[in-house]
Image 1 (cartoon, rainbow, N blue to C red):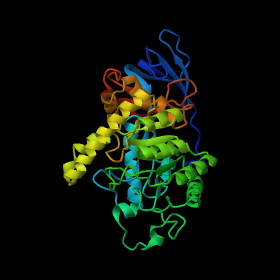
Image 2: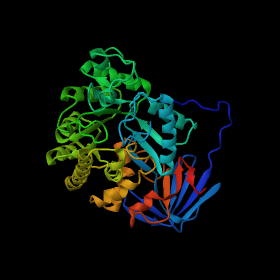
Image 3: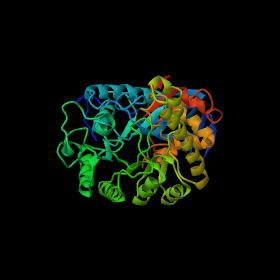
Image 4: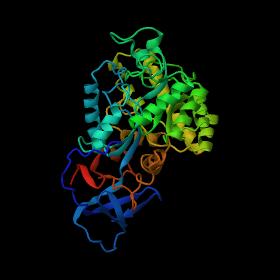
Length: 439
């Protein structure tokens, strides 16, 4: 992770003590509300939470949010910031990399303004573009949320995340088995082929490659079953149990968690038994698969907003009736998965698959989670404290407590009464700095 200062030699800004007055403060750990509490921020972290009626500590500045409801900065555990919106089809792999990154800059800005101060970017078609964006945000070149990056999809040749299988060979590309082979074959340095694996040796090599490039996690594609990308079978394993286990073992050695895209139950079982941190999508989850997740402490990240968003616009994409109906079926299956997961005690973290729909609309999923059976508190916790736990960042993120990073979002309306209020942030603070809305 880059630590380069974009302005070497500049004077350091003193760490001010800022007092933030709130109208209602949501304590997401206790699922309770503090009226008229204040938050003392020192630098980029919370120094104290002051209950109503207690004396205010010394401070340098005041941020008055006393007419608003304040909660921790939101976390989306499943986004794709690089490139344009791909719901009408797969983003062409021969698009200029500069264009992909420029899209990413705009997407990051929109995501931050929507109240999401942290995201987990779970894969790009072109390797490591997400890491470049993350590093630019970290040194202040562009605004955006904190990013945890996968660097590239780790997938089988010909699988759902293989860009050539999805979009066909690029002009001038190599042909034959060498071109379509895993990362260890010819063309291994091609940014579109860096995550392709076909053996245990490939798996170890790719994970080591990701670690060297600064990835924060490893994202594997275990099964088919997507709607936007080339349709594939959700019950077919695209990565064998041996390869899944090899990736998890290699990632563990490097201290990297693994996120596994698995639409079918068999893939969920294989991934959970191998020790992945999260299951993405979980569309057609069976009760045994979800019981395995609950027993292993594996988090489920199911996107509920993308399906309805696509359904409202699918005719304009020129899709066939068959594809449109498949999207409807997938949406219904995900809602059923959430209901079953709630009953079985599976930990569910907020993740939207933003990039399938426009970035900045992420908070629209909270209401969909409510419609699927989650209480307002459960939905909000999924996008704050539970998401932070799923990312392994609970010491820094997800709550408004002393010692944690000063990330928060404020709304005019009460999200406990109307989850749609989270789509209308009035103020967003990241690391103690107002980054959107009122100052």
